[in-house]
Amino acid sequence: MKKIFFVLLSILFISTILFGCKKTEKVSELKVYSIIHEEETLALTNLFTEKTGIPVNFLRATTGELVNRVITEKDNPQADVLLGGASSYHIKAAKEGALESYKSPLAKNLPSYAVAQDNTWTGFCVLTLGIGINEERYAKKFPDIPAPKTWDDLLNPAYKGEIVLTNPVASSTAYLFVQNQLQRLCWEDGWNYLLTLAPLVGQFPDSGSAPAKLIGTGEYSLGVSYIHALAKYRAEGFKVRMIAPPKTVGDVDCISIMKNTKNLRAAQKFVDFMLSTEAQELMSSIDFTIPVNPDAKGAEGSIPVSSLELIDYDVKKASEQKDEVLKKWTEEVK
Image (cartoon, rainbow, N blue to C red; front, side, top):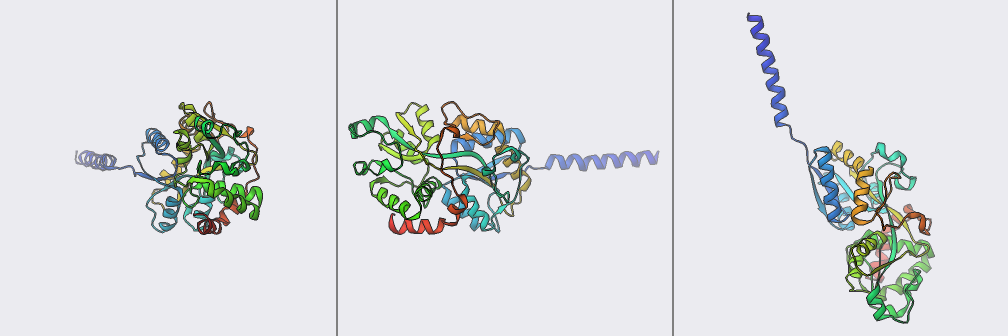
């Protein structure tokens, strides 16, 4: 009887420990620095939490601010994941030793341009630049000037004050545009183009999402924006026309994990999630982005990559030149 009593007592003791641990176990919160829009970030993180049970807390800010945070905080990261931003920014963070290497199982079917060679970042949607036109304002302001079809058409002096372009010091969108011209025309001619265009620009907002909004609401006739952002405003009923100029640039919006994160497994799960068909189709349904996952379908109204004439964009060069380019821009333009 004593033996049976002690066996039962031992089982009760072990059960108490096990069930007690289960009750007090807490899932670590995933912290995300997000460059993509708040609406998309909220939808994606909510779906991730629904599927995994992992709660998410995110901070939404501009590319420049968040990339600088990631680099500054590399020895003691205050977030686990950097969500969004063109590849050149993630390359810069990786070069500073701020990113963790992780190759998701879902990356095996992605195009090579969407996966870093050292696996420090992975693309989850394609980014392409275009010219946005507010049809009503343009018709009133420039009734005798055909709408621009190429990047060079933007240099018409008549457009002075009617163009909106993001500030490349703060925004990856505008830096991609700057590199588009430098790589399309080469260094000297590219800078001649940029320095000719700058005086025609009426506003240099910091947020990459601003030009599409300002064009859509009719505050400007023309602007440079991601094509998917313009497509979104058009789908919402705004009088916006999208122009995909020849010799435009294509890049990817990326996700990466912070070096020294204490929440590595959850961060890896979030990367896997962002590369999934479900996540990329959800994002495209909200903002008309072009999925990188070949099994995911873009929203109706989005422009497929196959219809674009893209330059052979050198991501490494864009990253290596970044400090020099932005210094020159600050000194000579803004």
